[in-house]
Each structure stands twice: as C-alpha cells, then as structure tokens.
Length: 363
Ligand code: MRU
Image (cartoon, rainbow, N blue to C red):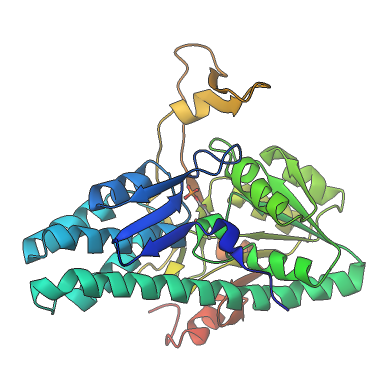
C-alpha cells in the first residue's frame, strides 16, 4: 500500500543541469499554485526568511541547495563561512536549517574550492532523498496507530495543527504521511485541521493538501480544539515539530502546547511526527530552544480573496494596536504520547535515545 506520488505538488524540485530549484510559492496557496525559481543563494535565503517556503525539513533542504548556489559564486573558505552565516540567520527555530548547513559544510570544507559547489549540490540531493524515505517510514510507523484506532472505534478522527505535510517536506510530510497511508487503505479517516493563526498554515496549506487527495476534513478555529476533545470528537492528535530537545520536549507551531494540554486533560493520544534531523541532541530541554518572534502585522491583519478572486489584506484590530507574535511554543515531553520517527515510535526520551543509539537522554 502506498500513499501515492506527491509529485503533483512536490514542494521542491532541483535541476542539476541548470543549478536551479523550483519551489511552490506557499504564500499563494490555496488560491493559486505559483512556482518560483531559485537560482542564487540570496534568493534561497529570502525564500526561507519571507516564508515562500516553510516547514522544518523543507527549510533545511532549500538551505542546503542555497549553500551550493553560494559556492558556485565564491567557493573560498571566506565564501563558505559567509554563506553559512547568511543562510543560518534566516529563521531561528527549526533545527533542520542548522543540521543541513553543518552537514553540507562538513562534506565540502575538506575539498578543493573548485569541487565544493558540485559536492554541495550532491549532498543537498541526498538530503532530499533521505527526507522522502524518512517521511515514508514515519508514515508506516504512524499507520499502525491509526489502524488500531480504526479497529477499536470504527472511525479515525485525527486533529492536526499548522502544516507538517508534503508542503513542509520533500515527500509526504511527517504528520500527514500516516494520514495519506490510512486514506490509501480506506480507513474511515476524518482530519480536523486547525486554522493556525496568524499565518493560517492549517487553513491555507493543510486543508489544500487534504482537498488535493480527497481526504475528508473539517477546518476549525484554533481555540475549538479543547471543546472538540471534551465532546469525544477527536481520537488522536498528530503534529509536526521544528525542534525536539533530547529530553523529548517538542517545539512546534504556536498553539501546539494548548492542544497537548487539552489532549492530556481529555485522554486523547498526542503524537508528533519526528524526522531525526529535527532532534537537537545538543539541547537538554526545550527551555533553551530559540523561539522566533515575527512582526505584529501578521496578527493585526488577515489576508484573503474576495468573491472576484482579488487578494486583500484587511486590518482586524484598532489602528495603533500592538501584538505579540511568537511563532512557536514548547510542549513538555510529559504531554506527548509518542514521537513517531523513521525508526519507530518512542514513548519516552530514553526510548528516543535508544532508537538513535544515543547512550542516555541526560548526557
Ligand atoms: O512557521 P512554519 O510554517 O515554518 O512552521 C511549520 C511548523 O511548525 C511545522 O509543524 C513543522 O515545521 C514541522 S514540518 C514537517
């Protein structure tokens, strides 16, 4: 059983012959599928910073290609340093960015400058291929849980938040991969998509992905999660992650923590789709994860289309209002039922360390 080819909307396509990347400009979704071509490192950095592309694994992959593009212009040690610094500064929270840059840098810095750009491109291609395989493995691990719920309840109502889908990765997504497999084998799946204020990744992106695959879904305002869980309408929550500390604390899109609290209070299992490059083994706890703070304009306005399909941005607060706009929060490990990785599901930090052959979560 497969979840089908995500190729109709693969978030990133690289072309070695032209040294270009074509990415879906996610700012245009769900209204239009607009592609943009990235042909230099500055544009790669802009695409990450201004969220033409987003989602932890995709950010890492685009940064890896960006580093290769930078090295085509300046393959010197100084150029390598400057490009890493520029790309690393684009977004602070998703650790996949640092992971991908360190990985590419680790391979190329020992090479003569004239071999670096090509080697970096190959490494970026490998990151993409591995991410596709990781997504698939997470999908199969998560599918086992969904099958169990379907067998027990005759339905699988899954809540998710933000977009940890194909648009956030190079393959099927992390949180969405089990859903795609469940749908492919005709489990009675219904996806509850929370809109994810302020940027609406749930409404704009996850809902679009569900519609593309004809998966039954319902959109809800973020604050409806608790009520739905109290009413027994949610069988399981699954979200993605931007960084997981070695004690199992999960940093993900703002609002994830609220869902985990509500899930805990109502006995709803709370799972996290977790590719290994999203684990930050250097951090003892989620307290030390840098949380991105974005502009208040994202909170003070709403963007959408009118009935003539014309785009508008409208204010939703009094002129002069100030807003707080942290993009991520940290869910303590104690609220997480399972971390669904490419090597299986870990229920504790110790189990996670064991899956990845780390000696102890405390070292
Ligand atoms: O700000 P974004 O849209 O980049 O945030 C994305 C998320 O929080 C995702 O849930 C996370 O990156 C996991 S993607 C597989």
